Image 1 (cartoon, each protein chain N blue to C red):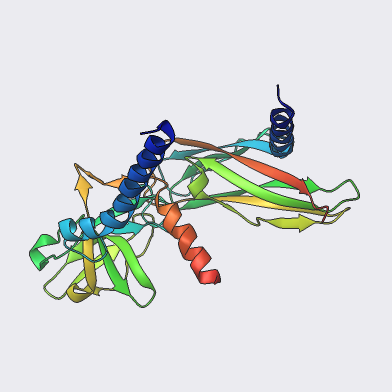
Image 2 (spheres, rainbow over the protein chains, first blue to last red):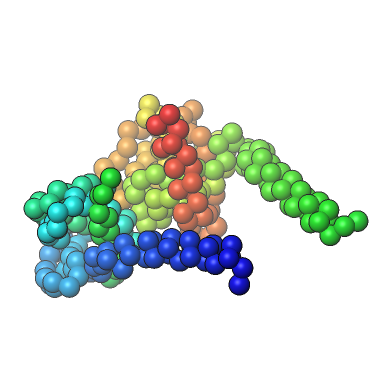
Length: 135
Length: 145
């Protein structure tokens, strides 16, 4: 293999690793809500491993929280990314923000079920990227 | 003819077709759908789940009062820009619209404010998911300039 090709391969490998680390380190939660018939129905199934909003009827809402802490000595920049069928119904209290070392934040994820929501189970996910803010 | 020259000509033809498509689609759609605003990006969740944020929808223009029926999704112009909501009632002077995901009706819309209505395929509006995000991004970038 030519030296130039080796250099290109090494650069590509570095870029891949740099891009992969935040993805691997991201906090990943599944989100789920069960839209049910009726009015003012709220059934909570609090599971720690996912953002489970339980059973909710239309025109109803629920907020779940994720605790963010900065343990090291470098400020951390947070980016929240939602995906899936539930993503459009969930509002994140805050996105694209920095926490300083020692800071703690309860980040709220609020779901609101509109009157047009079909009765069914919705799921999705959220990734919270933690990017060390070196510069 | 050398292989390199053939490649260059091939790429130029490809580029011309691409530019032609990009420049030609909007006026072509305007002509076909009879409106200066043939496509619209969905920027809110007020019509969820019929229309989702980031969808691209097609708008048909040149409508008479009789062309607008209850259940149609119409686009109208107001002080804030354009709104795309569903018709829930109509009379001789105005139509009343509401976002599917909203709990309240909109203010009455006079027929002159209506730009067009969404093109339907069967019971659902014709939409291209995610493609509306491109124009939303361009809009945000333009707003920042």
